[in-house]
Length: 334
Image (cartoon, rainbow, N blue to C red; front, side):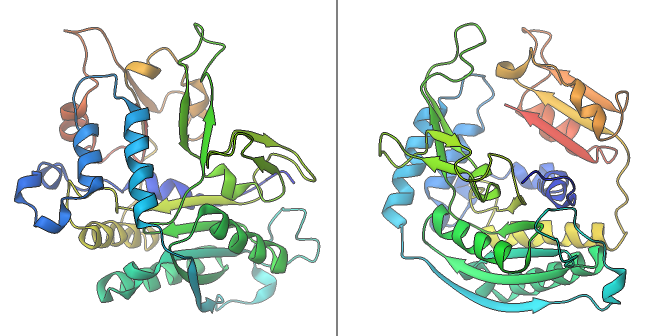
């Protein structure tokens, strides 16, 4: 089933997630002992100024930590919020599954431990109300903990086939699927060699066939199976759990959700200007297709250059780009 229309909720996770540059400058040694975790170490690796991060080493570190902390999957249905509008006024989804003209539905899956925090819970409930009112859609809230990406996908499939679903928003830490290839970008200068990455297309494609042919815990084959390889739903994440280098998870989550609320209530009005920020590995790629969002001329296109002419690095991004109030979309290629 091909997706012919979707909301733009996923963009909100890109627009406002970063906190102010002053907050981002706080050092690890100023944090409580409890923040000395794998995520702090990852943040430190990613904070380097030089290009050429060893992502394979970084990913291996991440996966080992995930294995150590893996717990059985559990979830709980919290509530279903339906919009306070005339059902005939609903905007109808264009998905083929909506043959009965069912109204739009969005599934929100929040981390159970995060939802247990009173401050986070208040903001999650407010977020559910915001998107329900903004889009005139029903919103299902589920809290979940532990498990694997396959468990989250089973929940999404269940809701999709039960009454239709437009998209999913994951709040807090939730498991992700991994995909691997023996030689990434093999068609360009011989390729980069082996690569693996987290792949949320696994959660979006609900009828394709995903296989782990070498049985190492990472998918390496994606074919149509009984369906196709296209996305049936959108999936977005709002997850500061890996940002321990910059602050406490709940604090960062609440700061972001407050900005998010201001957007939905009209207190923040985005400008039609975007930034494409391309680091070393992506400096030669075309960015022309970003014209589909704002228009071809409404972008700043900054690319890594050979020193001493280079501007693209961490200090510049945090101090010159993030504070710019005119950017309503940031595409960072690193």
